[in-house]
Amino acid sequence: QVQVVESGGGLVQPGGSLTLSCVASGSIASIYVMGWYRQVPGKQREVVATITPRGGRTDYTDSAKGRFTISRDNAKNTVYLQMNSLKPEDTAVYYCNARSQTNLRYWGQGTQVTVSS
Image 1 (cartoon, rainbow, N blue to C red):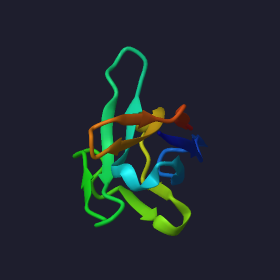
Image 2 (tube, rainbow, N blue to C red):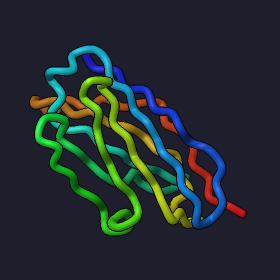
Image 3 (cartoon, rainbow, N blue to C red):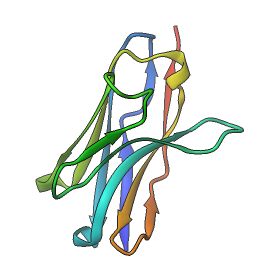
């Protein structure tokens, strides 16, 4: 079992920055990839960025490229999402996800990000 807990959401003005954190605990060694997803009411949850804890390989959705950076601190079992140049359309609940080598998925409770003036 893996548990993930997100933090760092909030209200930010357009063009501002925010950093989300996700702390993983439990069977850390079983984690193959971690990622950030987001969801707005009435829409499907979508991937924003992923990272492999061991190799550090990253992938981004097109809307996140150039603005968001996913990183990890293995010593702290933490994954970060640095979000810059935020836009109103980035408003969503952001979820951290950990996926095991056997494709089990673990989700956090989500953290609200609101981009508004």
